[in-house]
Length: 167
Image (cartoon, rainbow, N blue to C red):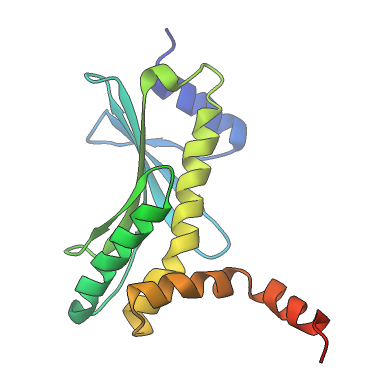
């Protein structure tokens, strides 16, 4: 059977993604991901013993100590909304992590599942990160921040719809 690590390497090469072997841990590879708004550090973890693949996307998050409880509440609420993976908040080192894992047996030789995993991780952080900023710097509650996401992500569509309403 083709090793999962080789399948991921082939997939990343095909997609033009730069995958790098960790110098200290042979079970980990790094995948820097840049999008329009953010740069993420992706980490692929290969658990050969249990036959599981994990992918972690991390992004830094600055916040004041008095915001920690509200950010943890937001994290719990976000995790109720996501279908694939979950978000973790590292309060000591101040970063968000989106985690996804699947058993090796679910990974076919074409590696197309990696599109779902990598894109899903990036989408989740990209989508929810503004809510974390609203709590961190906008003094919003977790509920207010999540409610504000729709307006944030669909602001142009909302404005266009308002123009079409009768006066």
